[in-house]
Length: 213
Image 1 (cartoon, rainbow, N blue to C red):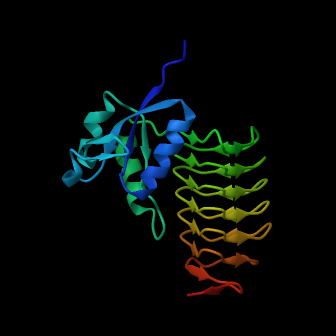
Image 2 (image 1 turned 90 degrees about the vertical axis):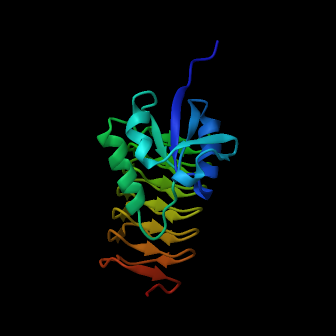
């Protein structure tokens, strides 16, 4: 007899939600009750899961379904993800860690609440991933790297050993961060960029050689 799964509500029904649904289904640990989205989407569905309310309904939903996953994507700013996590926590909700069974997270690594580690991502020994982060498909978080709260490490991005990523930062697809470097908080590193020196000033960076734009 299989163990019962935990009911889970997803918050945000856009494109990132589709990928999150696939990861959640693959874990076998949770069953998706429904999705919270904007009021005008009530009565619609995403991959067969109903939109059951809007942000204002979260406090009422917590009483019956305390577990939530924020499934809104993040590129320029994590502002909405931060706001929603605050609403959920203030209402007494729980933000579990979701790890794809097709990912590898070292037993010597640490992933904080509300974060999702997606298919074929690697979080290696000694690494730390903060609260409500997205570690997207094929991303590599190498040994002793530290990812601050509310970061998005995008598809196939590579954070080499002992890198420190400041909170609220986006690292784009296939970007490479060299060993032992520090990235300032609230920074955006565009897809395909190579970072070979510390980024001490927040901002948007692009290219190889890297430039601030």
